[in-house]
Length: 379
Image (cartoon, rainbow, N blue to C red):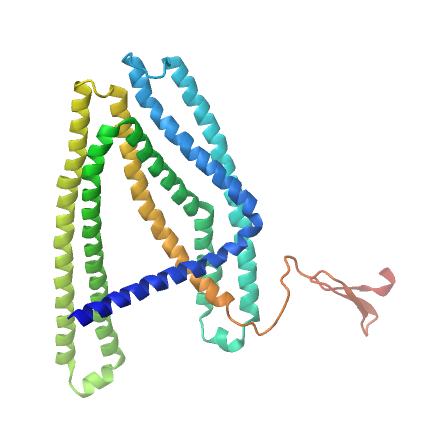
């Protein structure tokens, strides 16, 4: 038993190692971004400042409530707070525009170079390699896979980093402006989140097992239909029907088990997660009643708690997109690493050199991309 567990642990460790190797290999695609490193760096700069400005703007609604209650900590009036909001929004708008433009320059030009090199590699590969693969598969590498990588370079990576900044900034603000409430949150939320992660991981395993069993069920159908003459010859119809039925029964069993776990997970989310959230709000309301916390700080806490929760949810989604792009990058690099049958220098523009010759009819022929003939007297 221990030997089996050790073997499983080694296999899992090797899988993680392979994942790290895949990630390290996929980073090679960023060599196409290096020529545009300064637009990329400036884009990251505007992204960081814009994210911090967003956090500053989200702090102002609570301060406005404190101003209305006569409890302003910064001596601002409602008019001053309004003008500060407008000024911050204007600066953030400019920074957002510059960020989008800079990342567009990086993604469009770098992915154009990647497409050009990938196309050049495809047309210089040997015939045996090309004949072993479908045209649609090779076309998908230069269209769908490069588009997926471009989406990460232009949007997903920037948003992933932005959500990390927003998450860390939100936690920093809550911890240093509302330390007592932050301790209550840190004592409850991590336990709930970790429990939800284990729940989710177990459900994903069950759903993966269901998909595998469904695939096995489809294999039974495929094998029967491909060998239907043999099945008929040996009168094995009953055997195949029974085999298919057993496979379906196993799939139903796994599906119902997954459904039970999804139901338990929904109940867990409703009772435990929302219960923990309202427990924190109840504690905050008591602190306001006791005069420990200002009303505006309570609003700030609610706002930044929502921001942190949204950032956590977005990080999971963006991480999934990045993992998918790593797979696309690996497929692209598999082609780029193939040995070429023909060696040629890459060029951004086709050769426009003109060669002139005289034909048997007395017309001069110009060998250009658009070949034309003219009377030699007009040349």
